[in-house]
Length: 144
Image (tube, one colour):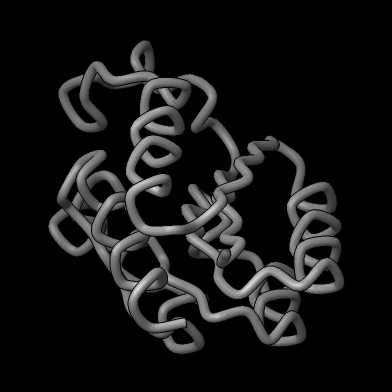
């Protein structure tokens, strides 16, 4: 059974409350339940983690890499555009990674157009709301 990490960065714990016109009304807890449910049909085990702290996210990536996880679904939130350290942790992990964004970051403010994670990811999903997480899981379950 494949083990896949589901990692969500800063402010994603506010989903359902934060800018619903951009991010929708679904909570992170609901997204995690959807992904976990879909994982059962893909012969995968998903472990989810969210933090507003960059170091905690990096520590979790290291832990998953050392525990034999095969893939990573990563929504880095605002760290997408700023965190070289998070990028380096993904590279060092060797985990096949899919970068996910609920909104289409390329249709938003200019500073959101540049991702430090995209170039080191196997795939990028943006603008599909919570369905992006399911697409990432399908890709990793079939490809890893």
